[in-house]
Image (cartoon, rainbow, N blue to C red):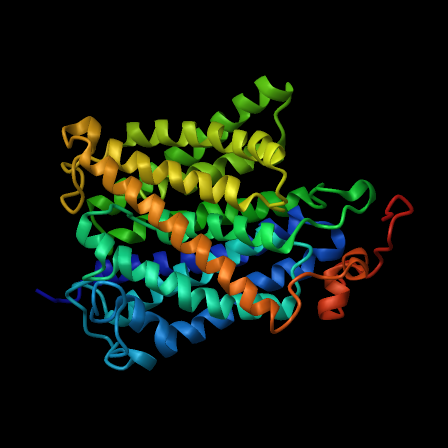
Amino acid sequence: MTTLNTGDVSFVFLCTVLVFLMTPGLAFFYGGMVRKRNVLSIMMQSYTALGLVTVVWVLFGYSLAFGPDHGHLIGSFDWAALKGVGLSPNPDYAPTIPHLLFFLFQLMFAVITPAVISGATAERLRFPAFVLFVLFWSTLVYIPLAHWVWGVGGWLRNLGVMDFAGGTVVEMASGVSGLVAAMVIGKRLKVGYEWNIPHHMPNVLFGGGLLWFGWFGFNAGGAMGANGVAVLALATTQIAGAAGMVGWALIEWFHRRQITVFGAVSGIIAALVAITPAAGFVSTGSSLLIGFIAGGVCYLAVSVLKAKLGYDDALDVFGIHGIGGTLGTIATGIFADISLNPQGRNGLLNGGGIKPVLIQLLAVVVTYLFTGLMTFLILKVIAMITPLRATDDEQVNGLDLTQHRENAYPDFELSENVFI
């Protein structure tokens, strides 16, 4: 039955604008983490995603991701340019809200995903290359993966993959793609004593706070209505985020005998990533455990694994989004409880056996292979059109000036300690 429910409409409307806020929040988060000469460039990449992906999503993206299925691999052009996407509900996805509102909610996920990837290539990816990357990646990676996992008829959805709000489609996809991009483009030029030091921690905290705030809409909105599952997702999101901060801080203390502000906010984000696929499927107690473990595991990924492997994922996209999303996706198959959400299934610890875990593991493997290979190919194609990497001179002078002819801090001059 498809009847508009004003409570559901109001709730999903609020969640949509909360998820929108996450992309400007990400811009502040990333902007505080880079060096002074690259603040505008990395923030501009988030805003670029807002503009470009919206146009792609309207013209054909939404239709291919959620439109009538073709071969369980892709949608159709039936809803291209929003034809037929109006104020009446769509019973396949959200029977109590306007179809247009469901489109808008899904748009915000499509927007933030390539923006997250930008953190891995911060301070050396040229702006023209980023523009092409957003267009190609959104079309060739995000849209098919979204259809597989969330689209009616998608093959991973048909297998029973549980991904409440984007552990595969958003988190792992951005994390793995970020790792591949960082390796293809190469390391940043090491410039003096500024190397790897966030230049503005208040902006990191402000952006991180906006992300946590927006994440309530990100996760709870997946219920597509003002109901008990939405309340569950709201609660698990808060609990996991808090536990992640504690988990990261404890491991950091044992490892370095200090608890940093940067680490605390990183632990929050890592846990929010991990709870994303599980938010509407697991209990509050399970969310506490998932968040705590995610904080510690992602700390080790960022502080130990990254150093040993030697890749330059500038803002730790893979260590937080890739590893956190992987952990959360697998944990969903372990802790899911059908009594909390009949659209899910029981996980391993609730009598579901090993099958849910194996299905979740399959989703992890597919996401890694598909997004990794496609990102590699996309970057190689873009490199034949325009250079990917900023020159050494451009990196020394900063991407703000060399890519946009602007400066976040007009009075900023290169320190005497900055050298090649």
